[in-house]
Image: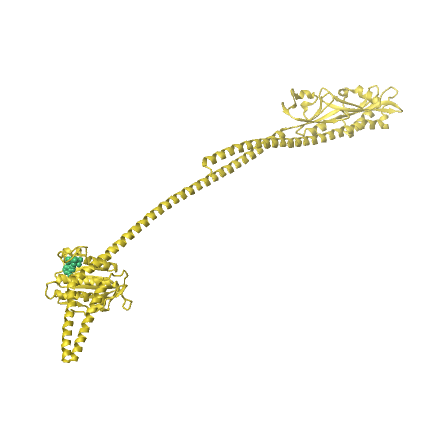
Length: 598
Ligand code: ADP
């Protein structure tokens, strides 16, 4: 990907190259257009002027041809021939001759018609005095008398110009006179005057004989051209450029000129130059715009790409940083998990320790619990021996049945102890509240008895309720609470402990109450703290209630303590209720129930 500077440089160079190419091409195109336009306009001008020239040549030739034939025709006429006679006195037929001349001039529209005797004497003419037309007369007569057609261009000081044709009149092989027809060009010049172009005729001496500009007539053409630039003519008081188109009128040796105005050529050149320049300029601008747009698009694409790359880099960096954070997080999680595992293990050990501590507390009473039946078994057995010796077998069997009952009771207690001392499982689920309370009391009662507790009552509702929890741990909760109550009640008369429960919505509220001294209000918030104890060294280590609190929390429940109005502590446990009929045990071994009173 090119950098922005490189792109700009590239386009700058392209622009310069494009400009050079554009300049060269534009120059060529403009020059070609101008030249083509000039050619076209020039040929147009020339064509039009040429057409005028042809037409005027035809007209002029037509006029001259018409009059050229008139004298030879007239000289053939016998009536004309008859005019050239003199009477005896030598007088000519002047009157007849003049009438004839007038008639011919009238009909042919000739300027004048004149009859001469061979000696040059005027017989008659059609119009007015003849003096002004005497120039060239001898030559006209002389040529006619040679049998040829005489011709002469004539002009006078008034600027009047005529052309004369002469023809000899023969009678009996002898020239008796000459007919001269004078032609004027008034009509021709009047027709030319309508044309915007200069139209004129020069004779062999380069004198302008006919012209549609009166000022030009009878001037030498060289005098009408600008000295040094022969294509500039004096027109309307100033020299103007004209193109001279010439056609020769062969017999007369006249040149008919038409001056064409080259202005359209200049205008056409100018137009062509302007149009071609504009087109070139437009093309140049379009090319420049296209180039600029390309450049912009390229720069934009480059900047987009750069932005995308930058974004990609940022995303990559962030992703890397995130994955590093993730890694350290997962390491942290791992560390936490390990710490939690350690904590749980420690907690489990603490639970176990607390349980064993409770068992320790209860051990004296429990051993007493074993010793009592053992002593009873002994005395039942002794008595049975004596009954046997006396042959009183029925009493023997009665004693054996009692011994059996005592052994069963001891085995039951032993089983409960064993399962209570085992490490509990971690799973929780629906457990029967009544059974658990019974099992806990089975273990706690011997100590209660030893401590002189009057009664431990369990409410009727307890046996029908199920809660979410773990069997051994929930049993431990009750063992701990009852043990604490026994401690608080020790030495007190009419000491009572009560356990009750009730369903409250989807919860079960269990209470463990005693009628002991209760807990000092300032200590109420502290009793669940680990290692808080009011008992003497060796009597308590202060972890019992803390373990109880943890266990209840693990079950998603809560435990709190209050003092009863009538005295004594009240521990309230709230657990999630479970529906009876569910598989119970929650991964922990079941304890078997026992009697409800001491
Ligand atoms: P320990 O029993 O080892 O002292 P616990 O955590 O079980 O530890 O009990 C903490 C304290 O709570 C006891 O020392 C006692 O002061 C108080 N306590 C617990 N239960 C009762 C009760 N039923 N009546 C009065 N005080 C109690």
